[in-house]
Image 1 (tube, rainbow, N blue to C red):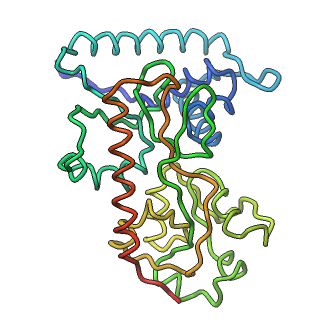
Image 2 (image 1 turned 135 degrees about the vertical axis):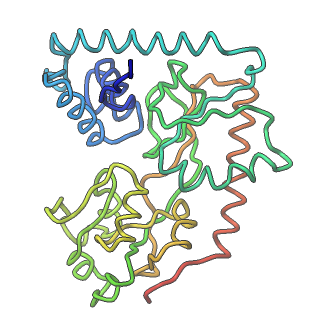
Length: 308
């Protein structure tokens, strides 16, 4: 008999439900996972729409599970325990130097994967087995050994080390750039602003020159690579996060609208448990540092087209 695949939410959404239930609020869950409050809300809403029942109700400054939510989360936790138990049965001693790294999807696609082969072949490459996933892993709970998180560097109970700071500059498809009469706030705001989680980057770029609030024709995407794709399709103006997006920009149609860059208040951090001492994890951290150092020199020697 042919098995019929049932539609179900992504595992990341189910993990987020469990995380919110444990944290007690969307804000605390966002802080613990390194993703935005808006992304948390959208994931919860997607699961609730799929189920057809609310999972949380507001309580003071936080949320609490509804009776349906309690039953559902209990079963999801059991299911995750079964998955983890099945995986543990297949682990052997040869995986003793396995390092599990949780990364933001855009960081993996725009920086890590491009350099992984070169880093592994380098003279200081750690002899480890690297397991890379985009799951919102609980570092303190042992679900991953380290994570690359995007934010301001504050994750309670964890150690955060700055890995890759960023600067911001607006980019657009040449067709959009040709329509700009000025690259000042008035010219840019005449077009849709593209962003991933919120308007933090754009507020930083405008530096208080305008009171920037969400507008109906602006477009928000959950993943930064989608922001770049949308800009390349001419759907609006995006902020290039340099050097994270440098390689993408060199291969794309996008052009810089301004030679100026501003420092982003958000950056990419290495996040570990405070007591992390495993040699293979520390070797991987050093490996990442060296990779950032090597790519910084390359980025300075290469540029991208500019409108100005």
